[in-house]
Image 1 (cartoon, rainbow, N blue to C red):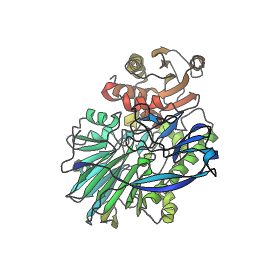
Image 2: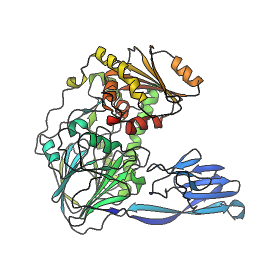
Image 3: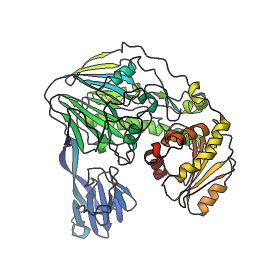
Length: 550
């Protein structure tokens, strides 16, 4: 692990407040259950109540079957026994009761809420935020500067995402002059290899210390040699310059993170596009920066299990959920300013015209009412791009004086020879999967296709239970693979994927979510469930040189 010069590591500290929540025990079902606040185990009249805080590192336990799992480090709690399966540690119930000993079914359960403390710096310093593009913000904290998640040129997610605006002509100079970078996770709109080719390799990088090593590994393979991977229970602090940095993990099982920043009396939280960042244990901040648009997934538009009407309903719901989540975060952080960012992409390739037409997104203006309701000022980077603070107060918003460069030529990224690509796929794909260690009760039918998803020559039959892989001639309507999988008791996943983009992922060991999020697939599932282990393994574990077949 590298380390930033002048910074020391110290543990995160959280304020704790205990309140009491009324619960009707008649609503607690037999065996294991959960609600927003607690885990329950009921055996007849006897009930145990546990908080949902993992005893290892403070993550929020999520019930899966009869056990509850922490997304931070995978600790698994057997709720019926109150013991962690993979550590031998015990979890103490916050309440044990027998319903026959109560005068009323209503009980008060103590709940402890937490919020990150940070530092009590006293100085009013000059702080500047400059928007460069998408999720790339350049922070100037006195004489220390850093940039976040630089995607400045080209495409992302297997040529499915394109920047919707050009970057300033001095963007690379601005990033290269920074004292360090913050890389939130390994999605290519945040860890963008093409952009990072132009970044000096000795620049220190702060990133998240995911258990999979997904981000650090790719950065190392790109040639960066000074990487600080934070462990979600520590912060970096420079007392002399009054700078405090804490990398916070997404509250789900994805490899994703956000960043809490202090510079004297100034404070800022980048939630990036994390789900339930740090389990919403937010401090009060002066400025909150978050993704806002939605449409940042192949789901549901690229999934064949849904009708067009169902897709519209899901997309509308998802846009609403993003607005609701940001409203909650604005209220929780009591932020003075809300800066929507990390959403400036478009489906610009002609082959994805139908995606662009149907993949509606929120606009920055959609957050005016939310901000007004919570007394927060909405900052619109479409209008101004440079924001200067004195202490906690925004003192100026300015138009960037540097003109933007031209957007990339899409055609330069999409040309390929179909015959050459097919020959390479036949040669390399089975070897790629033979080299993995993934095993699951899952059968995947991988079907390379043209850009319109209408022409098929063969499919790769991937049985991850027996770990047997073969190639087979098949048509797009062939049901034999699905029938054989279900007859064998396996889940079935069919992935029709654009052949050139599949080869690029295989050759370079890229994450498979590049394909799904980038609209390069058409996916069918039976049963219609998310195969989380498959996507996590081939997105965060089996990546980079370890997986590459080029």
